[in-house]
Image (cartoon, rainbow, N blue to C red; front, top):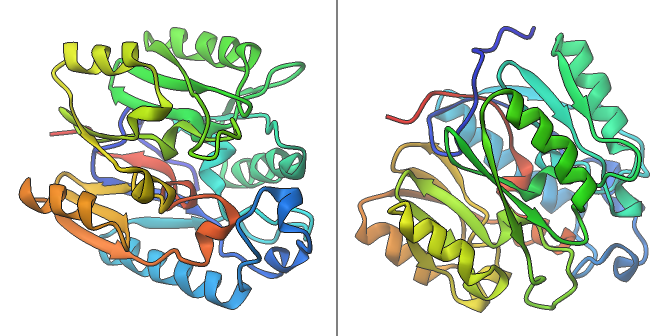
Length: 292
């Protein structure tokens, strides 16, 4: 049941508990990948194998896993649980999906959190649009929120009110779109904190003002080339300080991390990324230790 420590204000502390969804038959419900902005039709069996490998690594590193459970076959992207909600201060905020194909996932996540006994601090509603894949913690007192087609000004206003309750500053980051300029990109696909003073970023998609803010805060940015951004290199998962999950096939980013002494665990998401997401989207952190 829900017995979390009161705070989760980091993307880089040791991951202790997470929610995931094992992809099932819903993946096969899509017949027109263009209608879903997918890069093809992923093979469900292979997607499930890639997800199982991820869960194995999480459990090997002591992460307690909660599962979403059964979902409607209409929710073909349910494996990307992190897009829908985020946990902080012992409770949960449920977003509101902007993409029509994903509407309804919010209710399933809410039902599961209620089953776990989690307090629901806020559910984005009305004209608000907020997909939690646009949220990145910079430090324990500052969160970056990407604004694009997947998160609008009203959605940001609503979650800003929640963050202000806990004295967390919000930095709004306009996203220029993905490398295909669809405007559907989540911030986590173009910016990710991997240490308190180190980040991965695809600078073509974010404003110079935001990069300057990071520099002013002493955060070094590893620039991810276009090919590796498309291969979801930015969408990493920090397991614990200096131990990181990286999608395979990204030699430039891998080299940068090796040079800085990271323990890099590469995982294949070749089939999974056809559905548009990355590793980070597959893992909804529920509990992280404070950064050391």
